Image (cartoon, rainbow, N blue to C red; front, side, top):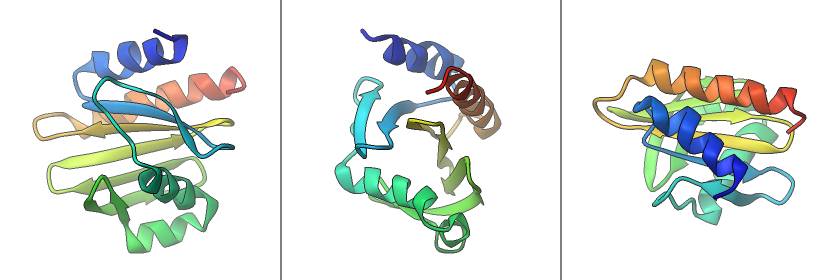
Length: 129
């Protein structure tokens, strides 16, 4: 298991408030590493990358289509994108090299998912990733 995958499992899934997590390479627009059983399709990668590459306010207005669901965007800025669909949601944090993606499901606290994802994103940015 890679260092990056260990980070995802320990710092995100270890909270018990992140269902699945992945790192997407920004430059290549490809999946780098993901938690077991979490597959991110190329169309989902494009959706997330475009949420940052284009005006984040557009993502906020129009929402996101991710993993075959429509999500209402509740935050979109230069470094973070939060979206929800009923009792599930996705949190995306941009670092220098990656998009860090975390999902939560019914029964999980979205605030814990957000905090853990943002903290890992900050750690990766400090490391130059």
